Length: 164
Image (cartoon, rainbow, N blue to C red):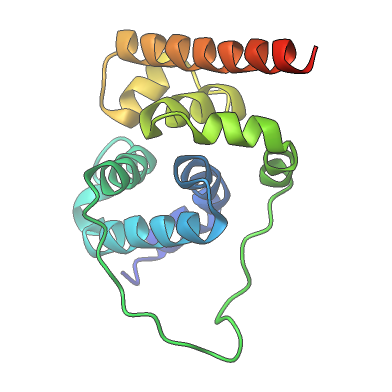
């Protein structure tokens, strides 16, 4: 895992991977754990992953599978006086988290729908890129985005009726 290419990959893509994990998990600490677990697994196989066309897609797929399969490795927690490293600060994440009602609505979506929305509207990826990253068809991306947006619209309309 000491491959400089892996280290530069992590340095360059960590903020985007963290945003993706944050939307998937809905919690900063769980997002950090998910990214760490996926990068640990990727780093252990970097010799193979680096030869693929899209190492970031490999990590994103790993995160999604770790989350949806519920097989995340349980790690023994050790209490420490101070965190070993500061948590990642990101202005885009802070903006997303500042709107509590949006955060609640997005958090209620299934992980794949949340992933599609983040990749499409936060990271501004194309449908083809998202399909490649998630290992699904472009049609699946379109349907997941459509369903997720419909759910968010319905929730917003319900809130307006309740408060109106």
